[in-house]
Length: 276
Image 1: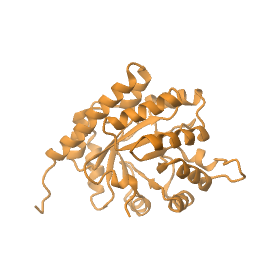
Image 2: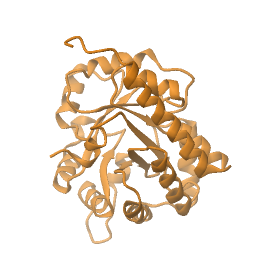
Image 3: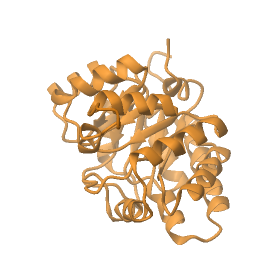
Image 4: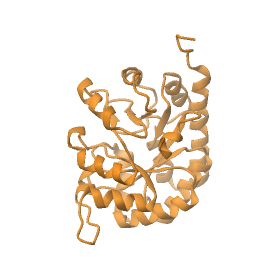
């Protein structure tokens, strides 16, 4: 049976939208997530702040710092997720780092990936993205995700070897996160040529392919979907709006609507398959 996340890609290109939980506070995050969903977001990537976010560029690093300074913790995160899961009709994906998961203390004598995943599932999380988790060390988290019905999404970088790519695809569920360029997250003014190369390497998988890192404009979304992606992942463009704190919810909704429209444009401009 297809997961809730995978179903979000079933009918049209999906918009996966990231914000850092607790930036600038919990109540604002609830408002922002609802605005993103009203704008067309199909999957919400809700960042659980960690003090060493190695995959993030300055924009999201600062958002994480603001959230940590405001007191965000894993337990508060799960409470936020539980509230949101009652109010939004889109799967919630937890994006965080493995050290936080590995050291998670449930408060009842249990520690590590299994109690973390159990708490995430109880709160309403549908999947995990863990950018610093090597596929060869993913067994404990994968087993916990399978036991609790959560998807485990792997990030495929331009530098991922064919051998590691194969192991990732054997274990990945939900969708494949395609890192559209080398480096860290952050809004860019163009689409990297590495995006198209990476999508071409994934032609053989039946998992949906969503591209992230650098998408900020409607034309970016159109080009990426036209190039074969099943969805786009946008973070820094939304986090920039949150940081400015000016008519934030309305601007988030409008930006999501713009990017979703771009993704739909990409369907209409995609080349016809050769067998048609």
